[in-house]
Image (cartoon, rainbow, N blue to C red; front, top):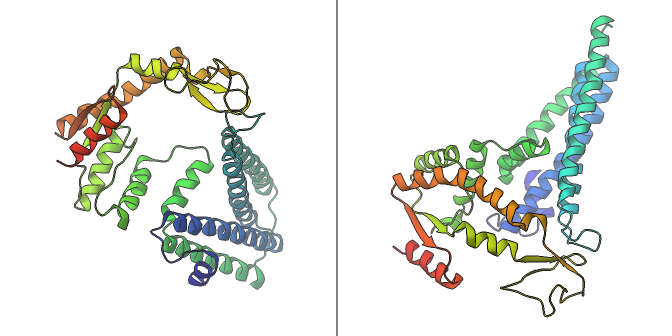
Amino acid sequence: MTEFLLSHFVKGYPEVNDPQVRARCGNLAGLVGICCNLLLSAGKFLAGLLTGSVAISADAVNNLSDASSSIITLLGFRLAARPADDEHPYGHGRTEYLSGLAVSVMILLIGAELAKTSIQKILSPEPITTGMVSILILAASILVKFWMAITRIKNGTELGQKAKTYMDQGLLVPDELVVDLVVDRVNQDDCVNGYVLDGFPRTIPQAEALDKALKELGQKIDYAINVEVPDENIVNRMSGRRACVDCGATYHIAYAPTSKEGICDKCGGGLILRDDDKPETVLKRLGVYHEQTQPLIDYYTEAGILKEVDGTIDINDVFAEIVKILGE
């Protein structure tokens, strides 16, 4: 069944090393999961009604919430990916957070209702009957869940599904799982000659977990490159940004100025300095960055693999310096 679905509904399969094909496999796994959870929910609701079991009904609600949260999250991501427009000059990124809030509220409401029903059943117990139909439904649900697990593993999406369960609940993905995701990715064929990790790890626990995972595979981090730019330069660069309130186009007063000061070249709208680019905001973000990054700099310095690059020089020269380090 798995091979049939992949070969008929995933364009480019079995070239799973292609990122687009992998994305299609993940989308298919998500859609199959939604359909299966809806079917399981309906079956378990029927079994719960036939037996009078709150536990089976609660499990049905669990399947329904899994399907609903997946649908809401999928819609949230799709809406968040839409480009900026007149009413949303900075894009639709907040839709993702709203979808997460909706999922959280839904889970809380369902949990409260199930808790209420369970208490009522405890105070006023009712006989539970178990018939062959309910047993068959539960057995079928076990088999379907087992097949779903095998399908996800075969698609290479089991780690992503684990991460998704945390993200759907608005929780941070644990460091161990993030490291597993990174290691899984760098073990693909296109990384056999090397790879660059940008922005990861960010903390000492992440760095230690990554080193441990790579060591078990007989690999290691060769270089940690720190592109050093003084805070003053960063503040000047960020505070020089300007954004059009109408079309969302971005400019810089020094490096990418508009033809007419304060007027967008694309639509003629007015330009503003976004709150995120204001000097005081940038300084706060830099404070957090240094607090998190300095221990990492010390960590990789002690490991003897830290390399410094001057980030104030021309961008082409920065690139050349990094290439020179990687070629050592």
